[in-house]
Image (cartoon, rainbow, N blue to C red; front, side, top):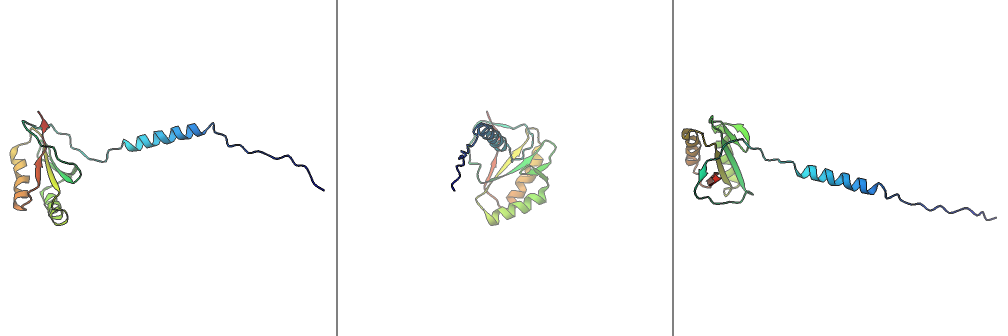
Length: 132
């Protein structure tokens, strides 16, 4: 004996799909806004001429107005910079070092870093300044 069962048609509700897409869009936008670069707040010195370099392969040495030294935004000292420069020279000698000093930093503090780089004979160095 054959029973006549009514066939059920399943329908996927699409009302909530727009909500899910909107939430995914918000999530992606928030994640993309995260800035992983650490910066030290300084007042840039000004220069008459400037050359732009690529930011892909570089390390940053920050010097604030009190003479504190930072390597890529992480507080450190000259010994830390010396070890990092030696590692850079051995692993990637074409990596550019950016020296970013506050406008009010005494030159003797900047000169300490420059002498260290001179002793290590590291030649790929740039000073970062504010475009005039």
